[in-house]
Length: 106
Length: 120
Image 1 (cartoon, one colour):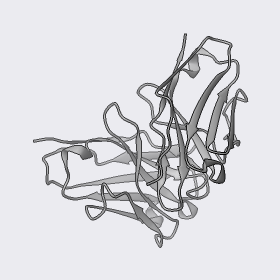
Image 2: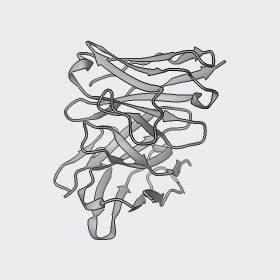
Image 3: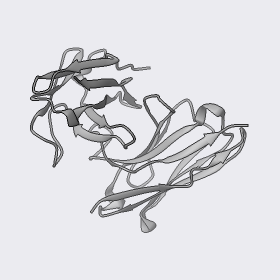
């Protein structure tokens, strides 16, 4: 079955840029979505179709996807961005999620 | 305002059954592809089932295949998950979520989730 691999944790200082990666075989051939889940809350979509932001998502969130790696980039990271982040793709049959990355804003 | 509200979660013994519901408001449910996604305590997300707008395309993860049944009632703007032969490992929060367009385009919005606990 298809697998998406994320680093368990990423740390960033306030105001700096955070990058969270998601790796999978030929992932660049698929569309990737990203979700933010704050403590005690439901997940929320922050990026879909690799680069698109839903209405209401700040411009500091951006995405890219090429080769075997998709990346969620948060520019000017704020304390409110501290959360778990999950990547997701569809392998043609199953909806697959990465294991999640805990973003800590130090 | 778009709202997805899950209900039906409960504490049951292994081998028991539950029926989860998700009622949708503020969007055209009949055009929406829907899914059930669960999260075990302290763990990540798992899409266990999805259904297209008219119920002709249905998927089940191997972990629930043969035990869970997804269905929908477009007239009542509701999504359901019937769960039989529940196991301890089915414990978790169950979310319903709408696909932006289809399975390739991500899921949003999500409901608040309903907790299923399977324990003897």
